[in-house]
Length: 358
Image (cartoon, rainbow, N blue to C red; front, side):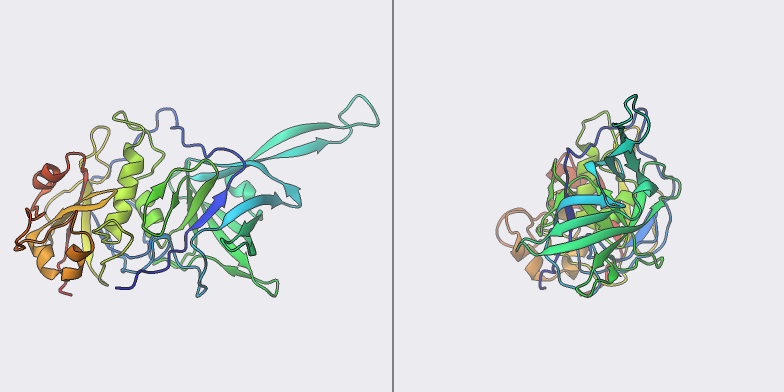
């Protein structure tokens, strides 16, 4: 399979990206199984929403399509304006883009020939209409704007953004491909992902993940990387990252998806209290255990999943995954979470799947 182009929309910020937990915030636990379709897209593809059963089709990209344009992996943003005023201290706070600007208060100074200034913080819908100057890796300048900001339903910490890119003729076109609900929106994550699907913390950049792709899907399924957890400050970041591997069937953890259209998966985690976020529930008819997942990819696969996969999967990462029946080494086979955790004790994300033959 040819590795797809990853269209990650990343931004350079004037200040550190903020991922401090909200006081009292904790993961929201779903009580019903979450049954979804796997997808190849990391930043865009198809998405029906978080805590609901349903289906999404598989795709080919990590972060989302940007229309039919082939674009560089990352865009570095070196300026953001709103209504002609420069914005400063641009950052991500949880699931929202936040910025500040200086406001001149005319007539407020005791001196008739001077004015006072104040700092104004803008968040969420207040940033609709903001424009961002982008530069490709080759130095070409692009222009993006936030055409619309929509609060995420039932989530006061997250906003969805309709992004547009300026064309050569001065017109604007939508950046994200539409998801399964017909919307072409994105949410911000305070990290960047490379073409191998690896997450990188950054104080100067962040990623807009289209709701049609794995970054936003996993966020909306409840794996919000900024959420606090008593175990460690990185638990939720790692769960979100592992989820992006699972959502794309990126077994080797090298950025290559091994998805197949129409493959439903049932996902769950064993996150300690206040988790889990997604519960396993009753076994789903027609589904069998597939894998345990970490930020590095699958730590093991069931025998039935191995039988449906091309030999190219094991050949791509022989240091990590060994198919059953091979003469060398111990096969990385697991049939349940306990067996998966024997390969890696920190694995907390698992899935069952329909086993479509390749």
